[in-house]
Length: 122
Image 1 (cartoon, rainbow, N blue to C red):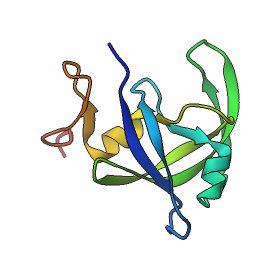
Image 2: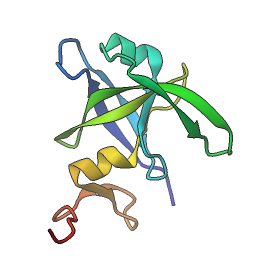
Image 3: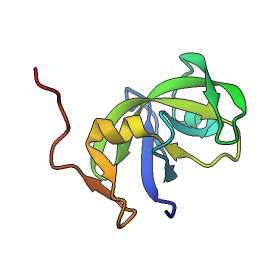
Image 4: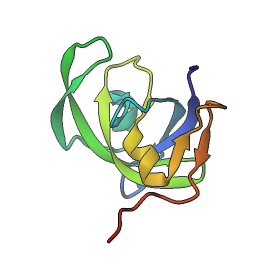
């Protein structure tokens, strides 16, 4: 399967500073979003904590994270975002996708809106 990229805008919760906008790799194997730390700081996103992550190569690393408004395809959600190293490729993780009801179409390899978000019987 090929790689899917999409333009994403990342803003601080109060939208008090210009957002960071870039092409993000859509990664359904990543839980959280990730962007270069300097870009997130410039957008006014603050560090809220640190967590441990496992990279695709199996390496375990610790990165700081914050919370941000994530906007793509006309939908917005608030999600955790990792302060990544300089030069890293920005990643759109599965939580942001699921929160907005957008998924990856395995045939076209593009993104599409789900007809409805799954919700178990309540």
